[in-house]
Image (cartoon, rainbow over all chains, first blue to last red; front, side, top):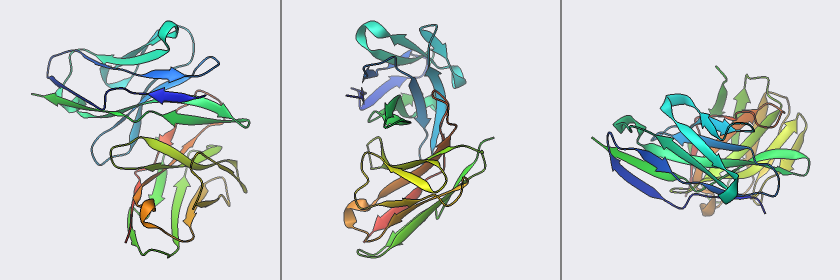
Length: 115
Length: 113
């Protein structure tokens, strides 16, 4: 089975705090993992990806994510959080089916950062 | 900057009518995708294509057809629109190689009444 789980539908924190958005995946092979962000009323934008190599990957807008094979997780982190980080964040797994790659998305986590 | 352009950006359709959503990319990407996003949820893959004149079914293809007449263009067709197809539809494109970024269009908000 190929799936992505984002267990927290909503996360709220104050500006200046550290944020960590959780993502777990199910995939039988070595995973390609992504984080995308969707600001209100806008489309999805790429933040970062893990393909291979270092477990911690850095992306745009000051975000980083840590890949942990031991518990099949790929959590997104940023410190400190800023009010402009308020958005919906999607974790995605690049699955492979019928000879073609495709992105499998989690349900998303809506992040609200209060100033 | 990679560009994926969708049209229309919003549409109201009547139940049972035909709807065509269009997508054009100037990225020279091989892959194109149609995703559906329902309020409060993630994206689900409807159809995709990795080469012109060929389309593949995604995870939720029922009620939808797709057409890719050229590398740049990819359409999603609802032959008989239903209330349950009210959603935001995103077109996207990417290179063939695994692990590459997917670029999304701005989305089309479809309301079926």
